[in-house]
Structure formats: C-alpha cells, structure tokens
Image: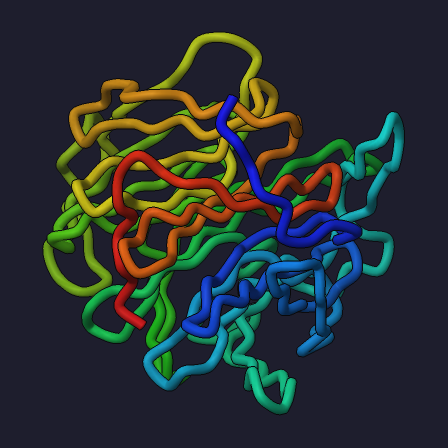
Length: 306
C-alpha cells in the first residue's frame, strides 16, 4: 500500500477533489450537502451550501466551480463507514450549478427540462479545450419503487446556452475523462465495473458507429467484486479509475491493460485528482471514512484546461 498523508478528516462522504494553486483542495461533502475547502494540517472552510447532493466539481473557464448535483441520497452509517443508500427522501432533482468560490453564490445552470433533457443524478464532470464540458448522469435507485433510472452522458456549454444527452443509454456512468489529445472520451460505469472509450469527432460529438452496436468501445473490466467510481487522466493517457470494493485506484492504459493497482484502506475510494508543480501529487477521497489524503504518484497527472 502506498504512503498517504492525511489532509483532512471528519468529512461527510467527500468527493470531487479540485486542487487549487494555493495548495488547498476543494471537495464536495455529498451527505452534508456542502462544498468545503481543505488545507494541509486539517483546516477546513465551507465555501458553499448548494443542498441536494453536490457530487462532481470542475473549474470552468471563468474561474468558477461547476457542480454536478445529484439531488441527494439517503445514507446508512455502520461499521465505521458512511454509505449512500438510494434516492433521498427529500430528493430535490438533478442539476448543474455554477458556484462563485469567493462569495459562495450558487447559480442554477441546467435542470431537467432545459433543452429537452432529463437530469436525475449528475455525477462527474470534465471540461474540454473548447470551453464546454462532458458529464455523466449516474441516475437514482428507488428501493421503495423497485426501480433504477436509465441514464446517459451529456455535453454542455459553460454559458448555459446548450446541453445535450450525447450517449444513451449507459449503465450508471460515473467517472468521465478526456484523453490528452482531446480525441477520446472515457467513462466508467459503476455496477458493470466497465471502462468504455468513445471517439470524439467534434466538440460534444462522438462517433455513433465506433463500437459494437453503438458508440462505446469496451476497454477494460476487472474480475472480482468491484465497482468503478470517478476517474482522472494521467499525462501519458492512462486512465486512473477509483475502485470500490477492492479499495484503491486501477490504472488502465489506453490499450485497455492494467498498468498497476494502488491500494487504499477505504472500501469507498471514490476520486483522484492531481496537482503540484510536477503534477505528481495525487489527492484521493476516502469517502466511507470521510478523509482526504495525498500521496506521490508514479507518473504526472494530466493538467486540466482550467
């Protein structure tokens, strides 16, 4: 197991680390319905309270945070772990929000019905070089109704003028990433534990005939009792997928081979992000136990557009 430095603990199901230039890291606390800035040494500051279920985060071209809000989960706390458990009793709808880091102002950017889309549980987000962003909708499980949403992968513009469901259906897509050259889109499905590649042919467009029977090209799927969560890209094109169950990060090559597995001690290892001068500081969210940790990575992460 790698050596990890504790940055912050006591977080309520943290995800979506965003590494800032000043050395702080911004995370969502999904269960607490807030967004928190963390500094080495344990200092924390709440910067916004969007409500619902703030999930994925990314810095946009305007320097603001763009948030995938899943509308909320119920939770179970047992054996030292906090665990999401189905749609929240007070589910407030899936949406995309824009947040001013300095003031904490939360602006609703997209919601269900805008441009004819349906948003149930937006999850993970990554901006491209054109100022737009891809995001996944993980959907919701309603145990009372014994149903599970059928969802997809979206592209939207940062100015609120356009949103489209580009890939449908997808089986609970979670992590999303773009190759360093901008020609490939990667998505990790949670329950199938499948990593899929899509060929980007224009901003917000993929080749609909690239895969067997559709746009998706199956890339990697591990054996065993595992689930995929969020992902981040390395500068060389490797895909780092947070892996639940086995506890850690699966590093997969663009050719679909497992490069390495970096183990952690939290079954809900959900996110990884890169920072530092050499982009080899890796920040992981250990969500079940409420920790944000840091480790040195073997290879540089991909520097994001913003």
